[in-house]
Length: 177
Image 1 (cartoon, helix red, strand yellow):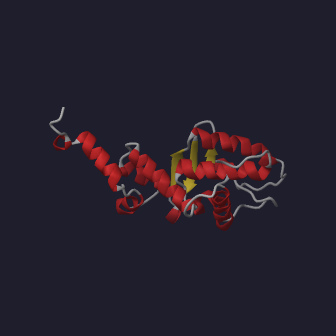
Image 2: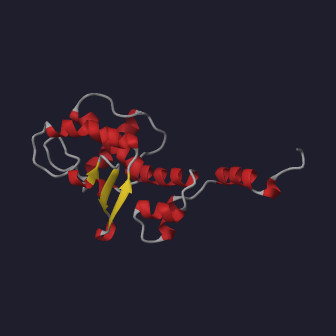
Image 3: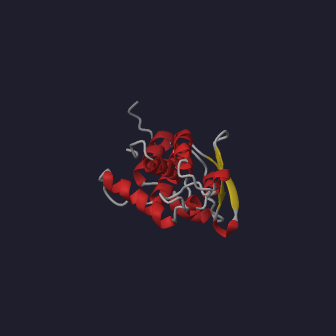
Protein backbone atom coordinates (compact mmCIF):
# COMPACT_ATOMS: atom_id res chain seq x y z
CA UNK A 1 0.00 0.00 0.00
CA UNK A 2 1.39 3.35 -0.98
CA UNK A 3 0.56 6.92 0.01
CA UNK A 4 -2.72 8.10 -1.44
CA UNK A 5 -3.92 11.58 -2.29
CA UNK A 6 -3.16 14.45 -4.58
CA UNK A 7 -1.12 16.49 -2.16
CA UNK A 8 2.53 17.47 -2.38
CA UNK A 9 3.22 15.38 0.70
CA UNK A 10 1.52 12.21 -0.63
CA UNK A 11 3.32 12.50 -3.98
CA UNK A 12 6.67 13.10 -2.26
CA UNK A 13 6.22 10.25 0.19
CA UNK A 14 5.25 7.81 -2.54
CA UNK A 15 8.29 8.85 -4.60
CA UNK A 16 10.55 8.34 -1.57
CA UNK A 17 9.17 4.89 -0.76
CA UNK A 18 9.29 3.73 -4.37
CA UNK A 19 12.81 5.05 -4.86
CA UNK A 20 14.14 3.47 -1.66
CA UNK A 21 12.76 0.06 -2.60
CA UNK A 22 13.60 0.32 -6.31
CA UNK A 23 17.20 1.42 -5.82
CA UNK A 24 18.41 0.21 -2.43
CA UNK A 25 19.65 3.70 -1.57
CA UNK A 26 20.92 4.54 1.88
CA UNK A 27 18.90 7.23 3.67
CA UNK A 28 21.95 9.49 3.56
CA UNK A 29 22.13 9.05 -0.22
CA UNK A 30 18.44 9.72 -0.78
CA UNK A 31 18.43 12.85 1.37
CA UNK A 32 21.35 14.37 -0.57
CA UNK A 33 19.89 13.77 -4.05
CA UNK A 34 19.49 16.86 -6.19
CA UNK A 35 17.07 17.25 -9.09
CA UNK A 36 19.89 17.01 -11.62
CA UNK A 37 21.01 13.65 -10.15
CA UNK A 38 17.88 12.03 -11.54
CA UNK A 39 17.69 11.05 -15.23
CA UNK A 40 14.01 10.37 -15.85
CA UNK A 41 14.49 9.58 -19.53
CA UNK A 42 17.02 6.80 -18.96
CA UNK A 43 15.70 5.64 -15.55
CA UNK A 44 19.00 6.37 -13.80
CA UNK A 45 20.07 8.17 -10.65
CA UNK A 46 23.55 9.47 -9.80
CA UNK A 47 24.30 8.75 -6.17
CA UNK A 48 26.96 10.23 -3.93
CA UNK A 49 27.74 7.38 -1.55
CA UNK A 50 30.01 6.79 1.39
CA UNK A 51 33.53 8.10 1.02
CA UNK A 52 32.28 10.57 -1.60
CA UNK A 53 32.19 7.74 -4.13
CA UNK A 54 29.77 8.36 -6.95
CA UNK A 55 27.81 5.67 -8.76
CA UNK A 56 25.02 5.57 -11.30
CA UNK A 57 22.25 3.07 -10.71
CA UNK A 58 19.10 2.09 -12.57
CA UNK A 59 15.68 2.86 -11.13
CA UNK A 60 12.47 0.92 -11.67
CA UNK A 61 9.48 2.16 -13.63
CA UNK A 62 7.23 2.58 -10.57
CA UNK A 63 9.81 4.83 -8.93
CA UNK A 64 10.24 6.89 -12.10
CA UNK A 65 6.47 7.31 -12.42
CA UNK A 66 6.24 8.37 -8.77
CA UNK A 67 9.02 10.94 -9.31
CA UNK A 68 7.23 12.24 -12.42
CA UNK A 69 4.07 12.70 -10.35
CA UNK A 70 5.99 14.38 -7.52
CA UNK A 71 8.02 16.90 -9.54
CA UNK A 72 5.08 19.13 -10.63
CA UNK A 73 3.88 19.18 -7.00
CA UNK A 74 7.38 20.13 -5.86
CA UNK A 75 7.47 23.09 -8.26
CA UNK A 76 4.35 24.52 -6.61
CA UNK A 77 6.43 25.29 -3.50
CA UNK A 78 8.20 27.96 -5.59
CA UNK A 79 11.53 27.32 -3.89
CA UNK A 80 14.84 27.42 -5.74
CA UNK A 81 16.39 24.50 -3.86
CA UNK A 82 18.28 21.93 -5.93
CA UNK A 83 17.26 19.20 -3.48
CA UNK A 84 15.07 16.52 -5.02
CA UNK A 85 13.05 15.90 -1.88
CA UNK A 86 11.75 18.93 0.00
CA UNK A 87 9.90 19.42 3.25
CA UNK A 88 6.70 21.49 3.39
CA UNK A 89 8.74 24.70 3.85
CA UNK A 90 10.88 24.07 0.79
CA UNK A 91 14.02 22.89 2.56
CA UNK A 92 15.91 19.68 1.89
CA UNK A 93 14.46 16.67 3.70
CA UNK A 94 16.73 15.42 6.46
CA UNK A 95 17.64 11.79 7.05
CA UNK A 96 15.50 11.86 10.17
CA UNK A 97 12.51 13.11 8.18
CA UNK A 98 12.91 10.30 5.65
CA UNK A 99 12.99 7.73 8.46
CA UNK A 100 9.83 9.26 9.96
CA UNK A 101 8.06 9.07 6.59
CA UNK A 102 8.88 5.37 6.22
CA UNK A 103 7.84 4.64 9.81
CA UNK A 104 4.58 6.56 9.30
CA UNK A 105 3.52 4.33 6.40
CA UNK A 106 4.72 1.25 8.24
CA UNK A 107 2.31 2.11 11.06
CA UNK A 108 -0.50 2.96 8.62
CA UNK A 109 -0.44 -0.51 7.11
CA UNK A 110 0.02 -2.09 10.54
CA UNK A 111 3.10 -3.90 9.34
CA UNK A 112 4.30 -6.56 11.74
CA UNK A 113 7.75 -5.61 12.87
CA UNK A 114 9.53 -2.38 12.08
CA UNK A 115 9.96 -1.06 8.56
CA UNK A 116 12.87 1.29 8.08
CA UNK A 117 14.74 2.69 5.09
CA UNK A 118 17.49 0.19 5.89
CA UNK A 119 14.95 -2.66 5.80
CA UNK A 120 13.90 -1.50 2.32
CA UNK A 121 17.58 -1.53 1.29
CA UNK A 122 17.95 -5.06 2.66
CA UNK A 123 14.77 -6.17 0.87
CA UNK A 124 16.05 -4.66 -2.39
CA UNK A 125 19.26 -6.70 -2.13
CA UNK A 126 17.47 -9.90 -1.11
CA UNK A 127 14.97 -9.64 -3.97
CA UNK A 128 17.82 -9.13 -6.44
CA UNK A 129 19.59 -12.20 -5.10
CA UNK A 130 16.41 -14.31 -5.22
CA UNK A 131 15.87 -13.06 -8.78
CA UNK A 132 19.24 -14.41 -9.85
CA UNK A 133 21.52 -11.36 -9.59
CA UNK A 134 25.13 -12.12 -8.71
CA UNK A 135 26.69 -10.74 -5.53
CA UNK A 136 29.19 -8.59 -7.43
CA UNK A 137 26.39 -6.72 -9.24
CA UNK A 138 24.46 -6.28 -6.00
CA UNK A 139 27.64 -4.95 -4.39
CA UNK A 140 27.93 -2.30 -7.12
CA UNK A 141 24.26 -1.31 -6.86
CA UNK A 142 24.50 -0.94 -3.08
CA UNK A 143 27.79 0.95 -3.26
CA UNK A 144 29.70 -1.44 -1.03
CA UNK A 145 33.48 -1.41 -1.22
CA UNK A 146 33.69 -4.94 0.20
CA UNK A 147 31.86 -8.03 -1.01
CA UNK A 148 31.70 -9.30 2.58
CA UNK A 149 29.47 -6.34 3.45
CA UNK A 150 27.10 -7.28 0.64
CA UNK A 151 26.95 -10.88 1.83
CA UNK A 152 25.55 -9.69 5.16
CA UNK A 153 22.68 -7.96 3.34
CA UNK A 154 21.88 -10.92 1.17
CA UNK A 155 21.71 -13.80 3.59
CA UNK A 156 19.46 -16.39 2.04
CA UNK A 157 16.97 -18.12 4.28
CA UNK A 158 17.16 -21.90 4.61
CA UNK A 159 13.76 -22.46 2.99
CA UNK A 160 14.91 -20.72 -0.18
CA UNK A 161 18.17 -22.68 -0.15
CA UNK A 162 16.25 -25.96 0.16
CA UNK A 163 13.98 -25.00 -2.76
CA UNK A 164 16.99 -24.21 -4.94
CA UNK A 165 18.72 -27.42 -3.88
CA UNK A 166 15.64 -29.58 -4.52
CA UNK A 167 15.14 -28.03 -7.92
CA UNK A 168 18.74 -27.94 -9.13
CA UNK A 169 20.87 -30.64 -7.49
CA UNK A 170 20.82 -34.11 -9.07
CA UNK A 171 21.22 -35.83 -5.68
CA UNK A 172 18.07 -34.13 -4.40
CA UNK A 173 15.94 -35.98 -6.93
CA UNK A 174 14.15 -39.08 -5.74
CA UNK A 175 13.68 -42.30 -7.70
CA UNK A 176 9.89 -42.01 -7.39
CA UNK A 177 9.60 -40.65 -10.96
